[in-house]
Image 1 (cartoon, one colour):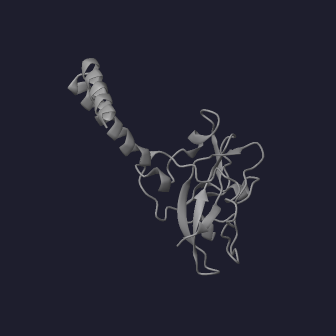
Image 2 (tube, helix red, strand yellow):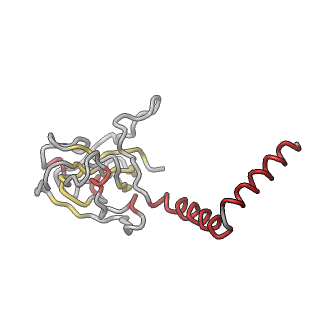
Image 3 (tube, one colour):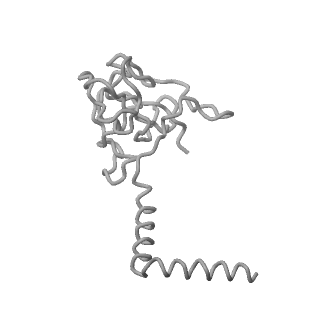
Length: 178
């Protein structure tokens, strides 16, 4: 084990010759601060169109209500124009738009089967705002410092192009809440 001692001592001495204590502590502090900021970054929950192999997506037995209504059960945490009124559906974007890979989530109660489902709200980006069927429901909405559950964030910023405009929002079922 002498080789490990020699290697550790040699690398420690080389580091001490190149760097002061203050700059070493500043580097460690920067690393810790960066690691603490990772949970604040947006998450790409809805980027994958299909569930992993061997796992079926949870879908409710009955899907009651009108998808073009703000009172539809999946819209419990939505903020924006409904894609079902803008040429798309609950799960697809209208032609000429692309779905943002980053998303916010909500947990909504389906009155038909009495279960709660995790809903992924993906923004469709690429055209100017749809302007039809605006809904702003904020059940369990959090502040912007918790962006994964905040509907006030510009989710089109995660699209493939920079400065792409918001068009409408989808409400996709991710799975059953447990």
